[in-house]
Length: 109
Length: 115
Image (cartoon, rainbow over all chains, first blue to last red; front, side, top):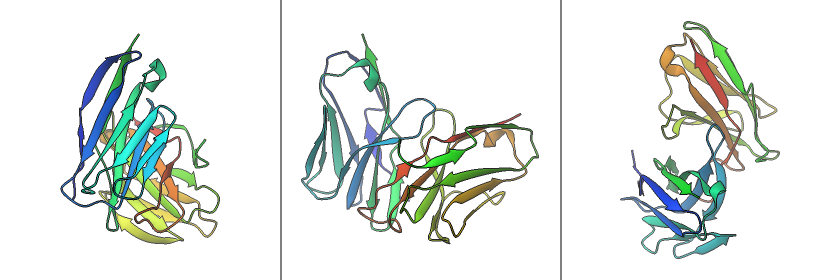
């Protein structure tokens, strides 16, 4: 089945820094979703993207649906300790839904 | 709070046993999805039901089964449990049948421990 690649796999940043992570695929997606998961909790939807080129913000988070429809990125500005967690991209290609392996974010005070 | 509820929150049982996990979708959502997440792993899609009918199947073992009832709640049955079945089991729901634009909202999960 289709695989989503997320990079980086993990990252350590200082509080206050900006973060950028991305998600790529070899297939064309018609929806991209970004989720955050805290340890032992369910994934929480952060941003949903439905059109190529779409740029959407949610507070300090900004995500974009790539023009080629094969990628998406998520940026977090001015990181804070509660940004710690695993960030998953997910999306639909045709009728199929798939999750990426996640980017694990650690924020150092 | 996503509006998706799951019970129980924790479940501890022994190998060979059978358990049932329950999920209530958000009000108005017709699809329910089940996922398994082992320690430090990604989410593995198990199965989807839409309006009472099986819609899509992922990597679900034959020892596992699910159903969606007329009131749209769903149950995931796990039988002949093995140590490797210990994991977090998540339920998600969405409005439609699962296609582009159909956002999934996740419940808090059930942590299953098999001893």
